[in-house]
Amino acid sequence: MARMKRLEKLDGFANVQMVEVEQPEPGPDQMLIEVKRSLISRGSELFWRYVREEAVSPEMMGYSDAGEVVAVGANIQEFAVGQRVMANTPHAQYVIAVETERSRRAFSLPDELSYETATFLPLA
Picture (cartoon, rainbow, N blue to C red):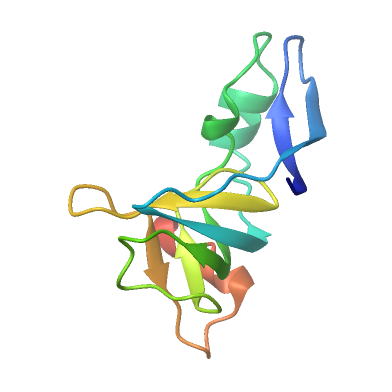
């Protein structure tokens, strides 16, 4: 299985590390995104997650990525491999976005919108 990097907050004050983990595989209602840009919010990210004493789940580390779809599950109809997207997902080299009628985590990006600019969409 392929390996990837992601940000993790381990036990201990400000103990944030880039770690290597197994790359996830998308399930039927999921897609795998290769992250090109990830937004770090100085307020919530720094104070509430990075500098606390206790460990934080990797799923809570980050909330806005932009990248390219590299794999889709069998039930994914709206997205295709190679498509540019913005997703509400954690800081990692590759992320899983769940796409169901009840949960929408990714949105298509127009070509004229840069990955960097797209990460700011949740703040608009």
